[in-house]
Image 1 (cartoon, rainbow, N blue to C red):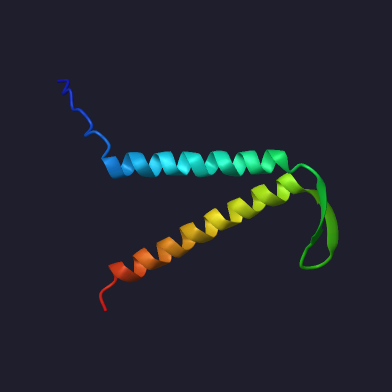
Image 2 (cartoon, helix red, strand yellow):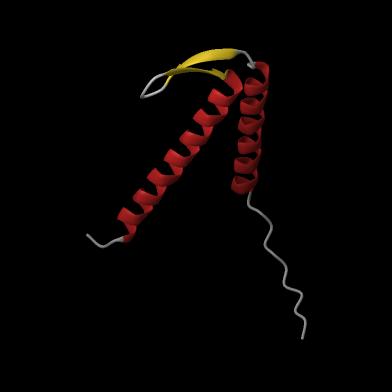
Length: 82
C-alpha cells in the first residue's frame, strides 16, 4: 500500500529565514577567505600565531554553539511548569 503523501510547501517565513541564513553564510565565507593573513592570538594559557581564516571560522562556530545552547536552555525553562 503506497500512499502518495505530499509535504506541505514551506511557508514564506521559512523561505525568508533560509535565504537570510544562506546570505549570512556567504558573507562569513567571503569574509574568511579574504582574510588569510597570519595573526597573533592570545590564548588563555599563552600566545600563538594562527591564520586569520581559522580564527574567524572558530569564532563563528563558537557563536553558533553558544546560541544553540542558550536556545535549548530557554526552551527547557518555558517547557517546565512554574
